[in-house]
Length: 130
Image (cartoon, rainbow, N blue to C red):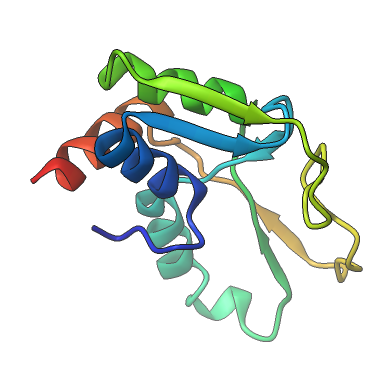
């Protein structure tokens, strides 16, 4: 699997498969902006072109969604799992995407044709269940 320990979607899927439950520290209403690896690969290939040389590039997904929505998509493909929200405010957690760092003026690139989030989750579950 491409997923590592810093990938929350991969972590949720591993919990669902191995423990039959997903534990989330906080309430799941936090908003995140996801980008599929296939979209990211395409953009990274495109920015190697000469016109992007020495430019600052910000790559972001097109659609923000709640963590709770991601968990519900996982539950659609792995039924009968329990969800536990530990409403403990974690120091590293935030309600919306964190833009506390200063983004340099540059070019913001979003995928032109975005890979479907639901299909991406479904495929990752299949891959991780092997």
